[in-house]
Amino acid sequence: MTITPDTKDWTWVLQRPCPECGFDTSSFGREEISRIVLASVAPWQQALAAPEVARRPRPGKWSPLEYACHVRDVFRLYDYRLGLMLAEDDPLFANWDQDQTAVEDRYGEQDPAVVAAGLAAAVAGRFASVSGGQWQRTGRRSDGAAFTVETFGRYFVHDPVHHLYDVTGVRPGATS
Image 1 (cartoon, helix red, strand yellow):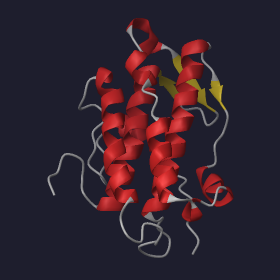
Image 2 (spheres, helix red, strand yellow):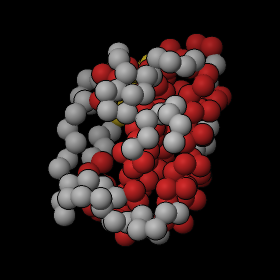
Image 3 (cartoon, helix red, strand yellow):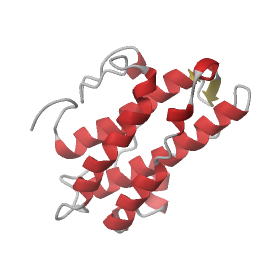
């Protein structure tokens, strides 16, 4: 089964709530970014402990394991990019092809326990150390998207939350 690459520019989640998962990136203070990301780890670890975690629910949709691998790699990438933003003036981020990474790293064949541990290790909480004027430091993607540390963090938080919705079908803040 192949997956159709996601070519959407998701930066619009900075202007309005996501119509799919319902998450609103303006609904929390910037100081909450680290807490929200850290809070997403436990539900991801629960999803990775489920039976048939590597089974795709339908053609063209990633399995929970594949989504978790992607989220782990997003955590690592955003930690790296945040480090660049804090250390350099307006860095330009190298491109990352998430779909190519999924294929090359064989997301669907990874050990769920190792992925669960990797999720926890990848969340270094660097956003928790951001303060004062650091929130206004900038960075750019090669497609022209420009971020401050604050907007970068808000954009980042949507990813693990949205993909939990993809896996569980439960919208953020809903009770199951």
